[in-house]
Image (cartoon, rainbow, N blue to C red; front, side, top):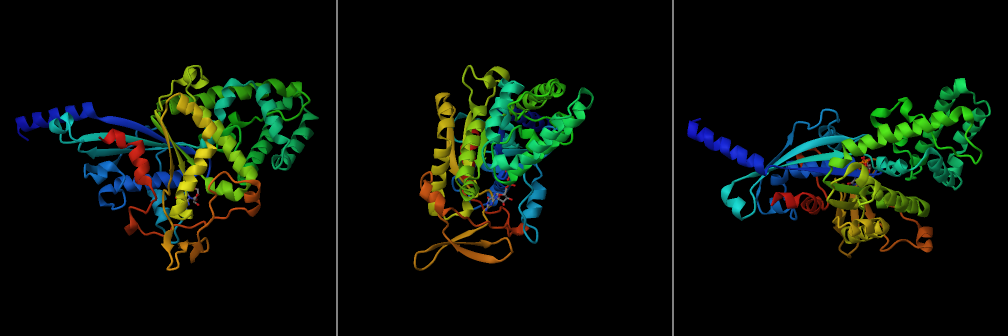
Length: 457
Ligand code: GDP
């Protein structure tokens, strides 16, 4: 390269670096909300954006300003990389399978190159870059934030009310039994061993609750431990009885609780959460409807707890401890391909109603938010029969192609009578080959435009 050319190229690189922008897009939601599928879908749409005919609302693509998008080397060697390739392998395998769900934090970096919109920058530069880190983490971890302001005793008292109501009451029987047996023989020298046994029973109880579809499960790492699996940091539990904790156990349980707050909860907020710029909160409204009234109510409670992590009021614990910088939150109902398109707006209406209280704080703090109903990977085809009936076609769990009538979606929060009728939705399976990339989706273009579009101008 001639020296002049080299100089020009270096100058251009410098200018580009100056304009380089970087965004940390975090994706969360409770287990099964669809995080892995959605991130895979988002990566598909971005990596194949220029080949896609299905991104009409992603402006940078629609206005043919996107030059390209590629995966970049991992930004953070301490954090596992989001396994996009494995997810695609499963989705396009024979038979097709859904990718493995999120169990820990993971991250993946993308780089987008694009032409800026008209204006000064457009005249000076021919291209710009945006780096996007997508971070996937379990929403259960956000349920731990309230622990930071509680003592072990206060936390136990709060939890106690939960154990006394069904379906938890029945599910808690085994661990309470275990606990009663061991408290009777608690001594200083076997305290650690005994607590470990009861903690194991408590984790099993949380796992059973999760299996049943319950959402408000604390502490989050006892449900989804990530890298802490098997470590003694998770050997504790709330005290469920009115009678006091045996002397032999008291100090150890309190210390474990404090350790968890300091060494597990706080580092997550400090090392990850504090750096996020944009947050997607995914919600599986359809499974909650299928689960019935108590599960739906529990989802609402859990979402409100989760939203405390976005309460940045001047005096909030979060702001004082971590100075977070999220400037936009999107609530996303997933799996919209399980209902017909004319019902998508109802899904958005339901998430609106479910998050109303928690969102007031966002409004107050002027953190913009929006609501979407999407499918990260769309597995059904919507058809309208000659008689006007809406149907969905897709592959069912036994591998058969099936056609189902439009499943009923309530247009408002269900009433007692609505719950009596119940709700059922199809569970379609992926059925793709590699040639189908970019895999079909619903409304990811609108979502992308909202969460990164402003950085691509
Ligand atoms: P995660 O626990 O939040 O990572 O959730 P996943 O992404 O693993 O999704 C959990 C399950 O929900 C999947 O195994 C699928 O059965 C279903 N699912 C997720 N995304 C979609 C989607 O876009 N459409 C449909 N029909 N089902 C989905």
